[in-house]
Length: 71
Image: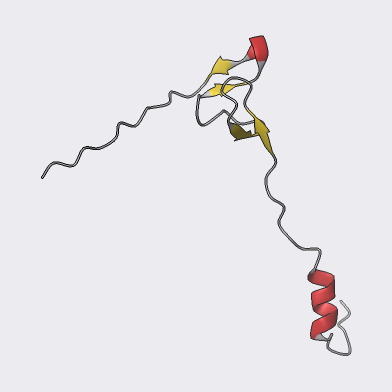
């Protein structure tokens, strides 16, 4: 396999790597509770997956009780 004869400069390498970047995940609005959630995932706030008549509960969400501090 051929190898480069000369070293690439840092600028050239960095110009090539400018396109290697992360994109933020696309979020959609849950049709039941209007919270933001990932597409094709169950809603973390209400536990439902899908929209309209086809939605179904797939996760049981536990409601956290505020902890009382006892001295």
